[in-house]
Length: 323
Ligand SMILES: Nc1nc2c(ncn2[C@@H]2O[C@H](COP(=O)(O)OP(=O)(O)OP(=O)(O)O)[C@@H](O)[C@H]2O)c(=O)[nH]1
Image (cartoon, rainbow, N blue to C red; front, side, top):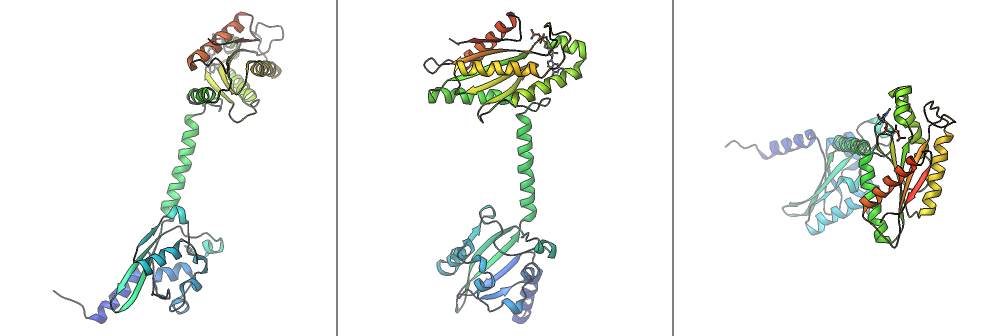
């Protein structure tokens, strides 16, 4: 087997340390820098004549007392290697991909590994390896953002932008459970645009869509508390979940919504009412604190109340207590 003489082997090792695409720093037992490879020079701007032999924490003062410091102690004094998670440690070393990034203080994203090194006849040293994980971090960030967008799309209605039926189902179940557990009232409003088929037939589907968008935005804008939810329940029907709201408060809210929809002044020649405006009918159901019901019973009661409001002439509200 052909082996290189010791001096050539050293040269080879040095060339490898220059060529590798990671940062490599070696500290002696006194935490003095004994190796600072080309990658480190390129990305730190600190040359070997400045760093070799110097105290590591004088050269990198920002690292004193932090996780890298603890990892170095673990390696030198306890002989334990450490891998510093990128998410917890962001970018500990002042390393930059180029001069522009340095001017903007945009550090390379880093994964840092600290390993103890045994050297024959000398106190233990440690090797610090720094990997540039900027691309992986950027990709992760993009994926997270895309997931957020997808999630919000999954829960919002494509036409009106308010919560969709799926969102309603999830929120309703959560609020129903919360009301039962906390012993609080829970109200549900079913809101339906009156004579909407006639509106579509008279003005066309596109105008119908515009009407839905306008009504949805106006009604959703009336919610005041973060746990209230207005959703498109289906077609021209909306549902409003009002946690911690008793029947009197829900009735007041429904009446305000009915009036607000009419105030929008959307012309509807076939509305069947003298003012020829788009109106809504609203069914209210409230689950009382002392008489909790199944969720389906609450939704059913709101539906029946809506039907009552329609039967009574539309542009009005009706309330039912579920049993
Ligand atoms: N433009 C538009 N129309 C829709 C949409 N979804 C449902 N509709 C229409 O909404 C209308 C609902 O009609 P109906 O259920 O008969 O009720 P209505 O005419 O509003 O009558 P009442 O509810 O009894 O006052 C139908 O003509 C549907 O085509 C939509 O996304 N866009």
